[in-house]
Image 1 (cartoon, rainbow, N blue to C red):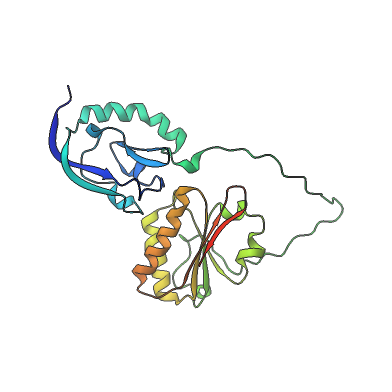
Image 2: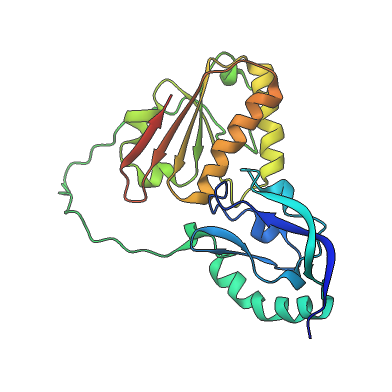
Length: 244
């Protein structure tokens, strides 16, 4: 029989939640899942009310409230985690961006075997991974900076021609990389480099919007006024939106 008690427990604001999934792996008890594109509390008895998930939500959709709820059950959590472990590995914490899709070919590209032509790269510097670029890198100073999700150049066929030219490039993944380390690095770059503008190019999947959140937070932490632009690419390689 489940015992009710007055205690602290999380509350999720579904209007704010965009289903990014950052909170799911942040909960050591496995009390959260993404259901129909929203974070849900699986069971009250799985939530210890300590709020490890709060700091991972880019939308501020999770709070701690005190109300009547099922008591926290450590034994039930242990059993739950043992059952969920294979599913978590397979589905990457049930983030919507992990859904597997296969597309039909849109047409063949004619290949000329005797003569090959390589389009010139518009990349102006190296390295490009945010982890590896020092804030003092000379190519960052006064740059029109572009922060790009890892998947974008593979998805958008004309990335170099349409986006990269004239920009200093940084590449990152908000889901697989260390979010907090990237946030600190980007804020320090913005503090030191006096960039002219920051553009984020992300994918349409919910998890990828964490890159937008990171960029906006880094601008705030830097204490600088930096014009911001957001470009979103669809998983079929189309331009979904552009926000200045």
